[in-house]
Structures are given as structure tokens and as C-alpha cells.
Image (cartoon, rainbow, N blue to C red; front, side, top):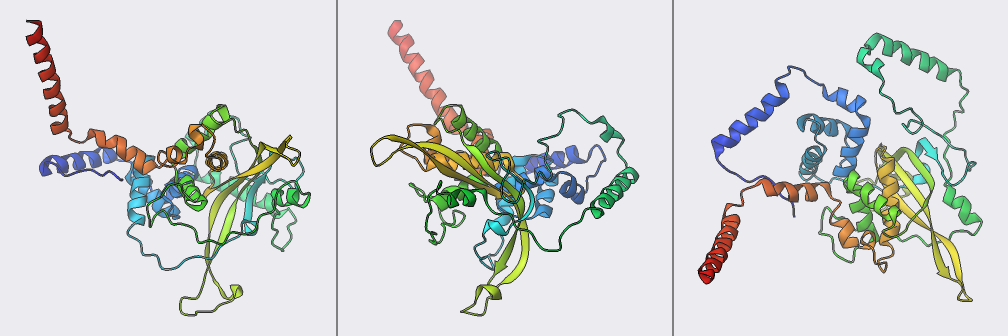
Length: 371
């Protein structure tokens, strides 16, 4: 269930809302929505992912309205999402068609197509850059011009280059099992309540919408020992995927007749998890399973943690909380968890007075017995 604020004294509530606006405006500083959109990329991507609404502009607007509160921004986006009509269903997309910005593997140094470091803080020094306090538009413009000139000197092919998946390379060696495509329509958890045991499509939806810190925390818990899952990241891919839809008025269509309406940025992770199985001779043998994670924007830590939990939830027989789908899926949703905790601020006068009366009655009875 979702918790929202309840009505109270109208005058007091209106005064509280005015004071909230005063706190935002009192410094007389105004931050533009486009400033948030283009300079707070990680924050925008996190809101997009947790709200499952891909709109960098609306995410930036929600961040401004929420004064940087991630939980409030996601709440606003989810609420807005619930008002939108669903006009089309997009076609299934294969991530091999991703236009890559970043692609790395922790499993192999040399991978088919090569590694592409792309934009990341992984290789930066974690030192405060005080030069940012003196940043100005002129210097930034000059830096951009110099950077673009450097790019012009690089010879680039006009052909679009797609990068093969590392796991396909391993499948060709027979190191990973081949599976037939499961074309069962996925369950949409935004349209129907999740049921347990949950299908994998439902689990993946909850995980990708999950609160980033919660997903990361439970993934870390599994690494530390609650499940003893220690994968190797086979591949991290960050890039854009196309969106295609069918013509709304034609019944039979070929795939090449679909309409391209845009693209969206995602982070995709495939982790290789070692497991012990019994071979035909009943001897222990090591194999690898794949944990999968994908989410909107560049959210690499979350996607990796998601891949860990995905593999954990494929083994509900393990006696660890990170393998319990009800424990995991019901506690990582940002709106549900923050709403449930925040509701404790709402009036509980009647229930608390009832508890007080019970305690007083008990104490009074004890005193009468002692006397």
C-alpha cells in the first residue's frame, strides 16, 4: 500500500505549505530546470530509474520541486506517471543494438570489440576540485571547443558499430548453457499487484524500480556472506536503445514496418556467478550462472547489485534473506518504504491513548495488589 499525507487543519496546512515555499525562496537564488537536467546527470538518472518514467526534463523538475529530496522527487514522478495514458506498447528490443557510450568487462582484459571506458568517475581522484568555485561560462566554452577539435582529428568510420556480448563469446565455447527464448508476455507490476511466488519478469521490474541505496545494500549483504554470492562482472554496458512501435491501425505488420519514435539511455549488466552442481557421476562441478541487471540512465552500481539479487532470487531454496523474494521485493521500493516510515509522523492519537490507558490500568492493578 502507498501512504500519502492526510488532511488536517486547513489553515495550519496552508501555513506549512507557505513556509515550505519560503524556505526554498528565501535565499533569492533560482536554479533553472535545464541546469539540473544537464549538470546533475547522476541525480536525474536515479530519479528516472526509481520512478520508471523516462523523462530527464520531468525528473529535473521533480528534483527542483522536491529541493533535492530523492524520495520526494520519485514520489512526484510516480504520481505523475499514474496520470499518463498508455498510447502504445513498444516492441521488444535486443540490447546488442545498443549505441554504446561505455562498455567494460571485469572478466576479460581483451573482449570482442574491445573495452570502451566512456564517462565514469571510476578513474578519477576522489579529491575536492576547488577550481569549480571559480568556474565560468567563457572558460567552459573554450574547453569544449578544444575538446571537439581533438575529436575531429580522430578518424571514425561512418558505419555504425555494434558491440557483441561477452556472454555470447563464452556460449560459443560451450561454457554457458543455451536457452530457448521465452516469449511469455511480461507481467506489468504497475497494472496488477505482485503475487508470490513472482515471475522473473515481475522480479526484474521491481528490482529496476527499486531504491538505489536499498538495492545496493542488499546486493552488498549478499556479497558479505548472506548467500555467499561473489560474481565477476562479465560486462557493463551504458548506451542508448531504440524504441519502435507498430502502426496503430494495421493488424499485420513486418518488423521493418515498425516506427522509430526515439531512444533511451540504459545501464545493462551481466554478472557471472560460480555455482556448484552435480555432474553425471554425482561429483561436484563448478558452473557459471548469469545474474542480470538493467535500469534507466547510467546507474552502474545499482545495475550490478540488481544482477546479484537476480541470481539470488533464482535460488529461493537458500536460507538467506537475500534469497527470499518477499523480503527483497517488498522492502526495496522507495515510495513504499519511505511512505510507510513517514506515516509514523501522522496522528496516532487514538491508538497511542489506548496503549497508554492499558498501561495505566495494568500499573493501577499492580499497585492495588501490592497494597
